[in-house]
Structures are given as structure tokens and as C-alpha cells.
Image (cartoon, rainbow, N blue to C red; front, side):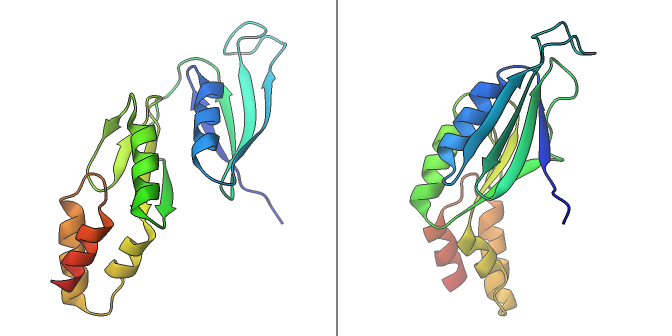
Length: 157
């Protein structure tokens, strides 16, 4: 079977970023970090780093090779949380030095977009009662960081 791995390009601080990410998501680890000893199109020997790591059950590679294209909303990492405590912990850690956005989105200090969402949100939005799903959706659209209790209250009407 083919393996699929997401790849992230960092201008700088790649190792700091991936160590922060892997410390936040249970079951994550940094597999390896290498400094390329040869000259590359991105710089002289030793100026480019690459790494392999996992976040939960997802594989990633990363490169630190100077400026190229900045991260944008077309790629984000979504973390589905079981509890408000998990949401709060991840939200607070990832927003440090970054910026928060509507609907559970934030950008971390490296510019990477994250969606920190409760598992319960998907369940509530998939409710067979369209009025309930609409109330939940309307409540969600007004939130920055998700609040599970407020989503549950919206579902109840």
C-alpha cells in the first residue's frame, strides 16, 4: 500500500515548531531531524534541515530552507477533541504568538493554520433534526474558540 505523508515548509525554527506540536498531541513523536551537509538550491551546506514526525496517527515531513511560500488557509491541521479541557489546552498553547480566527481556527506563531474542534460538533451538526443542526451551525459561526456547553445549549434550543 502507498504511504501518504503531509509535508510542511518552514522558513525557520522548524525543529522548535515540530517539537512544540508533538508535545501537544498525544501519541506524537519526532522520528528524526537531519541537517543536509551539501549545498542545496536553498542555501549553503548545513543551512537546510529536514525532519520526520507524527502527530497522532498522521505522518509528516518538514523542511527548514528559508522563505518560499508562506502557510495559508488552503492547508490546516484539524484536531478533533473529546473535551473542553483538550480544546482549551491546545488553543492556549497554539495561539501563543499567533492569532485566533472564527469557527475554531487559529494560526500559530509559525503561520500554520489549525482547526481545534470538538468531536461533539460534528455529531450535533449531523443530527437528523434540521432545526437542531441549524441552531448548532448558527452558534458555531459566532464562536472563535469552540465552547461545547454552548453548542449543546444551542442544540437543545
